[in-house]
Structures are given as C-alpha cells and as structure tokens.
Image 1 (cartoon, helix red, strand yellow):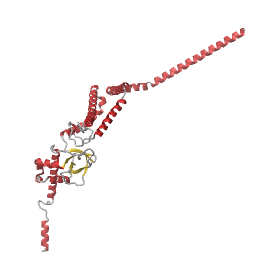
Image 2 (cartoon, one colour):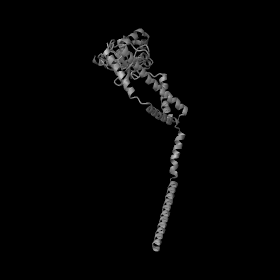
Image 3 (cartoon, helix red, strand yellow):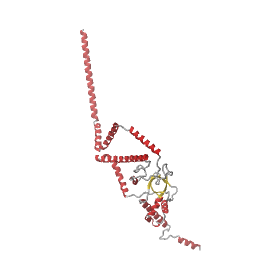
Image 4 (cartoon, one colour):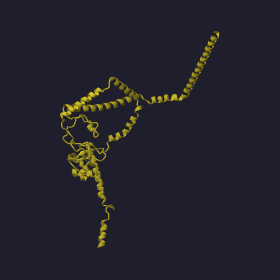
Length: 354
C-alpha cells in the first residue's frame, strides 16, 4: 500500500508537455505581462492628452502627472487599455499600483508643504518633488513620475548626430570666410540681445503692474527656470493668479527702491568719452577676430623667423660698427694729443723769445 502510494506521487511529479516544468508557464505569463505594462506605460506617456509637467526630483529632471488626471484620462480614453489584453478590465488604481510595483512609476510628494506668504493655496504643479514614503496610488494628492527613458523620436535621433558637427563647426570658426563670420557674429549678438530685452521687458511690465495695479502678472515665460518646457517657452499669456493682492506699503516700498536704483544707475553712468573708448576697444577686438586668417598667421610666423635667421649678420654688423666707433675714438685721441703737443711747443717758443 505504501509503495503504490509512493509510486503514484512519483508519477504525478513527472513533468508534462514534452518534459517541461509546468512552473514555467506562470513565469512566461509574468514576463509577457511585464512587456504589456511596459508598452502600456510608453503609450500613455506618449499620449499628449494626459496632462503632465516637468520638475526637479533629487537633482534629476523628471516628467510627472497627477493621480486625478490619470483617472480622468483612462475614463475618457478606454481604448488605451486595450493593449493590456486580459488586464484591460482592471481599475485605474490596480493599473497604477502594478506600474508602481514594476518600477515604471514612482509616487512623489511636494517638497514645500506650507503655503507661502501671499498665496491662497499650494501650487497645483510643484516644481520640486521628493519620493513619497508610501508607494501606492492616491487620486487626490498623488504625483507620479515616470522612471524609464522616453522613446526617442526621429527628430531627436537626427539632432544627436548633428551635435558633433555643430561642435566641430564652432571650433572651426576662426578659419571661416569673412562673410560667414559676419553672419555668425550678428546672429549670436541678435539672439543675446533678444534674450536680454525679453527679460528686461518682462521685469518692467511686472513691476509696473505690481506698483500701479497691485497685480502679479508675468508675461512671457521664465527662460531661467530649470523645469521650463518648450510648450511653456512659446506661451505669451500669463496663467491665472493664485496669490493675494499685495499691500500698498509693499508696493510703495518697491516703487521707491526702483526710483532710487534708476537714479543710482544714471549717476554712475559713463560719460561720452569713456563710452567711445570702450566702444573703440570692443571694435578692435572684434576686428582682430574677424580679420584673422591662417595666411596672416603663417606670414606672422615667417616674419618672426627672419630675424632669427639673420642673427649672425646682425652680430657682424654690430661688431663692425663697434670697431669703427673704436677707431674713430682712437683717431680723435691722436688728434687731440697732437694738437695739445703743438700748443705746448708754441707756448715754449714764446717763453724762450721773452
């Protein structure tokens, strides 16, 4: 009895399906489901209808979305879930928790959790995030950042091949033709002037509206922000104001400070002579850069080498001139001695006559 039972157990343990272990089926299913969720995450991230922002998390720039946005997105676009095959009927919470478990997402939390002075509520899209202690889905106050690299587009691939050529072109700028140097110079100067003008105009408009109307309105995007995207760079109209209006005392203080700053700049402004000297100096530097060419550099090197080649001739000339000067000095000394001896003889003769 015992032997037959043992044989039955051994027979049951024999692997089926051509000698393969049935335990391989769940692992295969797990790997396929992982690939399915990976494809789902990439498809959702590439979809422009899911609102997302960029932020800084532990000195890394990440793209994130809110929990309520992913819920609305999957409710309005159920066709996106078709890629999940058998898991397409899962709830949003289960899908996001699976993405968190597979390290395709990470739940984040805002760094600044206190309302700043002058604001009514916390920012809807914080610029700085940190990893949350609980990695579970939360619809109301959850922020979720993608952990995988976004799929490269054709344009990004082309740019990656063009960057080395751009670096090489920048290094070869001194050997450009004169006309090309002029185009590059004025293009860079124009771009720099545009950026500085944009920042000054943005600050001037904000200061005027802040002092006169008591409104905090920023026209044009903030090009100095690390989390700024291309979509925000081309935005002109400001966002809705979420802060309380400033007090009249602060507005008056900023107005007085602005007037004093302008008067200080006017008082220490350089005069016309100093401006002309500085402008001439800058023009000379620019002309040296634009007019430089390899031919001039080679000719300059040759000119420096010629004096070295004729060093012996110069030394001979110097020696001959020194010898001629010495002979002239000796002749002068002889003439002086002769004249002095003649004068002495003449004096002696006069003395004898007396």
